[in-house]
Image (tube, rainbow, N blue to C red):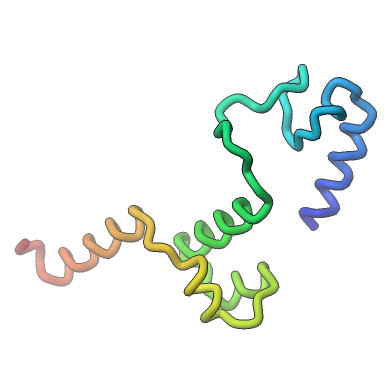
Length: 104
């Protein structure tokens, strides 16, 4: 699904000589890197890792993330991508505060 969309995007880019030679996926209209993206190289795996982490942080069950990523076990998904994000920590603190009646 996403790969098909990226292939189509590349075909459209190939017709635009300004952007085709740079090898960028989402350049500006003049062929420079998009504003706001970090200067360091972003690898495909970085995008995959971020996607898995954000899906888990937003409550998508590990089995579904496993299926999306093509991993063999949801345990591997949790070990590799189940980082504790600040948002999750705040939510956990709120749950504990409510559980204890806000006495902390």
